[in-house]
Length: 407
Image 1 (tube, rainbow, N blue to C red):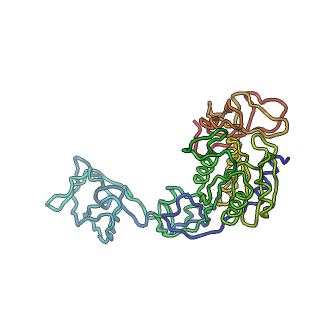
Image 2 (tube, rainbow, N blue to C red):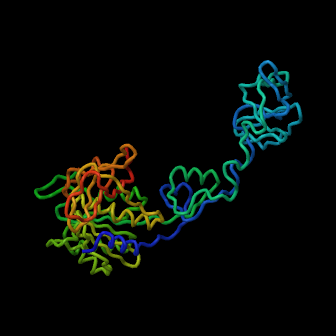
């Protein structure tokens, strides 16, 4: 059996970046940038008002106060979207709305609340002095033209999409979303909603896989349960290898009488890189490749499949999409943690902050069939092999589940 570390290295060596495509801005959510995004113009593009008020020359209202109002002649007004072609002379002011261009000659804005407002006499009384630049957003103060706004290999969230729109990007270069096949195997599997016969169970793995793939931004092309029938498996797996970038199967890779998946992958020309890994749960893990496809054969037990996807498939798909693969972080054990003598041990668990320290505790449900152990989990805890259980206060590695937070 391979160690977990060696198995990770083999997968990393075989992951290739997907090709690049240009998509419309509205289609970029969750995609990964394949180019640096630069500012096509400064931000703000022009000096503009930060308040509703009056644009003035600061020197004209020096010493102004409630008991010493300064009267200015209003020559017009400017709103957001106007060309901003007013020119201010000494003793003049202009009404100026938030976001409006600052008239030429003005160097400050006085809020409406600090003035008498405009009246029919054509004058405005100013009750507060201002310094040059007050309430003015200067051209380029946030971003200069040519600045890198978003770096290549960034996943696009609402913040990135808003920034792209702000700078007028209609199309963006992104890495193609991986096409994924999800295949559950087993005569005993039934889709939820159908009545169970003796010996049958409801399929849960494909629902877990589908949700995880969607969270990653992958496109699920095939999502199917296949009976333990070599001919049916051959047909399904052959189609998956032709149409998808990643094939993920659940079950059929161990040494049981009906475990046909590994054998059929080999018949279809898949290059096997490893089959078993020194880990618990999920020892019978298959990883293979064709020229264009990664193949992961995960065990059928639900905890083994869930943890296997997060530990092996998730980082590989992240790397394919150009994302820096998520990593584990150290944490302090709050409770005893079981170890295996020659295997890396994985368990669902909870992590939280305690007086500035990241601590964790594993689920009390340790069976690979006990999917309920994932319900309250926000992380996967792992430990290196060892002869004795780890004790409270010792260090382990944890992988935070990306859709969870640490309290």
